[in-house]
Amino acid sequence: MTVTRNAVAFLIAIIAGSIMLFSQNPSGPADPATMAQHRVHFLSEQLSLTSDQQQQALAIFSNSATSLSSVHEQMKTAHEALRTAVQGNDTNGIQKAAQTIGNLTTQTTAAEATADAAFYKILTPDQQTKLAQLPHHGPGGMHGPPPPGMQP
Image (cartoon, rainbow, N blue to C red):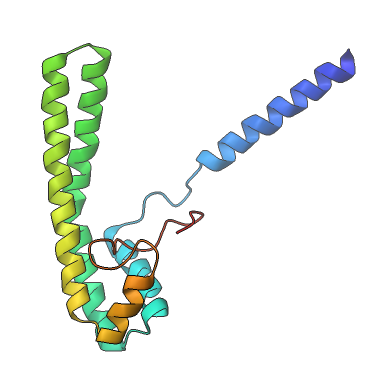
């Protein structure tokens, strides 16, 4: 019986440790400039971008990420309002939060697609073909590489 209790305690400790390990993000969320740099680095490797194209792409994606920073904060607030409305069974609050989330999603999609279009325009036809062959990339789907640890 002691062995069973020890085994259960050991398994609980392993599970708790795993949860804590996976939930940690020591570096915090990346800033817009860092996200743009990672994206350009990934695309440079995949498409053999020239240094001029890399500079243009960095400007395009940095400007887009910076402009979307406030939208992301607004989205976070809207999701918190939605959660509060759901917990309070506030149907008007749910409708208002859902509408806000929809509007912010529209803004995000349009801004990302505009940046994608500007990037697509600086590519050669061969690079455009390569981009279209990448998973989750190509016109309308070029929102950067998957986060670390995620499969494309």
